[in-house]
Image (cartoon, rainbow, N blue to C red; front, top):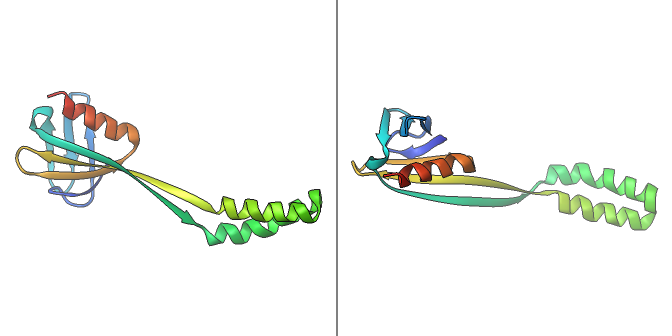
Length: 124
């Protein structure tokens, strides 16, 4: 998991090792047992954006193909598909870890990484 903030800096990596310890390799390198974790809060942020670049590429291509296959109606269908295809979303999964010592850790990672962090904290 990528470190995004907290007591260990804003860059580095954190992972749950096979020996059931949380290893934090940021500005400060440290490892923690599950009993040292006070709380883990996780969240998913999903952003939907519109890409003008893909719209500008998609309109001529899809309208031309639609026109060649279905005529003027196909051109309109190609326009609608180009507009709908220009939306994209980005999903980020974050977790905040609070330790009994008062230290904090904010990480971002894949769903499986965050789930293993939550399972790790639950094995106190």
